[in-house]
Image (cartoon, rainbow, N blue to C red; front, side, top):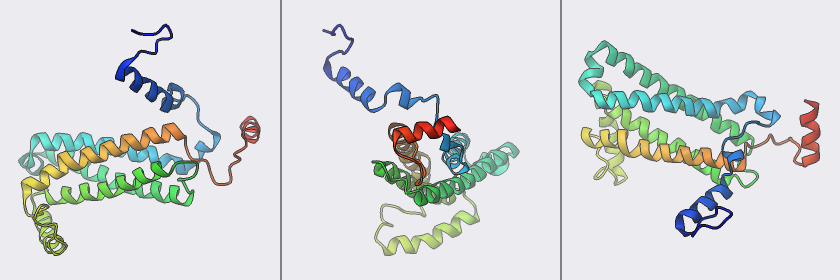
Length: 217
């Protein structure tokens, strides 16, 4: 039976209380940000997420329509082009975001897991982009698959990751790797919300000094 305070029992109540402790509403959906967020380097994280949303949306359309549509139809070629350039921008923004956070030592303040999830996202993105090139069904994809086959076989993973198998690569590209990438991205964003945006290295950490700086700005 629920208590007067509204904190119910059972596993659902325990999960709710733990989620609220880890991500209270003021952290999950803040209405203000620190003054140092005005710096341009903080923009690339949002740009990376925005580009990823376009990648997922256009990729979903391509997956529903199939290769014949994006090779023959004018609309299909247009959507395919949007998918390609959103991937290019996604990788570009992510690399700048990673390097910017590296030089800011973004793992400070108990943010090591935030940094790790972002780095793993980068490697998952490389695998997703690689399998995407393999499922183009043109001479480029044939050449890439042929060049990759011997290298992957030499390290012993070609038996279960067959780059010459179009169906297998398609499933890796549209199901497995996007699921992993999306899960890691959500986890990364929630960690950023929980621990806050990493401040610049020379930013004051004393609460009184921070309040004075905010008032001056």
